[in-house]
Image (cartoon, rainbow, N blue to C red; front, side, top):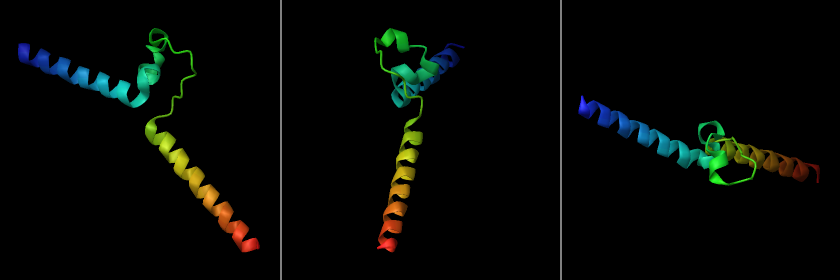
Length: 73
C-alpha cells in the first residue's frame, strides 16, 4: 500500500511540474497560483504549441502576401 501511495505522489508531482513548466505559474491550473506569484501582467492562456502554430500561420500569410505582390509587379 505504501508503494502505491508513493507512486501516486510521484505521478502527481510530475504532472504538477509539467503543468507549471509548460504554462508558467500564472497560467497553470487556470491561474489559481497567479496571485501568489506576484506578477501583475496579463496571463496569456495559449499553450506553447498554440503560440507556435499562430506564428507559423502568420508566416504563411506573410509569404502568400509577398508572393501576390511579386505577381502584381
